[in-house]
Length: 166
Image (cartoon, rainbow, N blue to C red):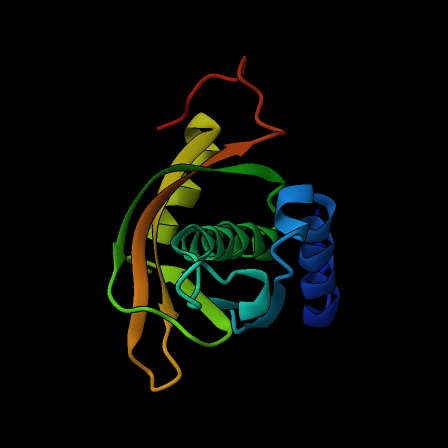
């Protein structure tokens, strides 16, 4: 059965609507800055994330990177015509430098070649996981924070009664 391809702007608007529908995420005032098929960038105003030192709150950096990773995996699955639930399973964060400017987080697959394996496991078992690397950049191009995360994908249409193949 052919998959309807939704234009990129509609997909980005749909992702933005998903973010806005989650009250804790809406409070972050984030917006999708760009998606090129391999990377997703989100931005948020510093004014909504400032801490007692006048720089971006570390929890906000973590949240933005996690949401960029979640959105990346969600959009990539949509590209494949897969309807699935995406969950963050674990993250490892590193804070490198304070950020005194608006936040911009970008997420990419940690290993782009692993995507084919995720798709195969998802078809076979109805669930799989994938690693994502994300960072928040400084205005000069340096790194304010970075994380590695693992996201679990659960195919909502998977028939658990179907025998496994392979």
